[in-house]
Length: 230
Ligand SMILES: [Zn+2]
Image 1 (cartoon, rainbow, N blue to C red):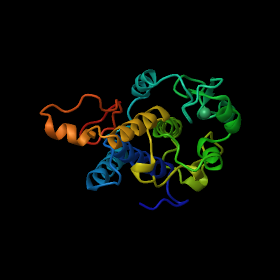
Image 2: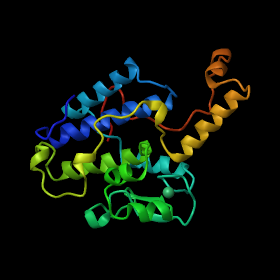
Image 3: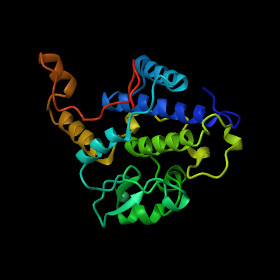
């Protein structure tokens, strides 16, 4: 799908959100590349969002995931001088709610300041922001424009708003270079080290055991099929 300035806000946001769901699924499954299954997930979610038969999963689910994450910077995983940061800065019009508030270390906090997430990140780091942070950002953007009846507005005609539509990702990097959160990234790299030191990798375990391993990450991807969720 090609997003241009004549595309509507919903075309941009739904496309990005569908790509996010695809990426989350691939990262969750520890796939190195996107497969047909992932493209199918993206296509179904995009179609469901566009037709209104699906909606982004509730922020409640994100709160539950958040409670399972350790108290550390959502951007880099540091625990140095943590303070509350708003992913969408409140002085740009971001919501002053728990949905928008996260922990950030002093370094990330002062570097980001009141800049837009994606505009800031591209000047700060080489990699892609943690998918959990991207998810919170996109859901708030969808909510913001939906509640104002602006989803069908062409991007070029959108007035000032708390989001930077120009920097919202239209493509996501391969899953091998993504992580859900700094916490999940550390867990994965520990697993990889174990694999190298002779511990059986996860795939081998599940092949020899009739019961699937129970220590898979807690991440639940956005709905890939059937039915709407609130
Ligand atoms: Zn940080």
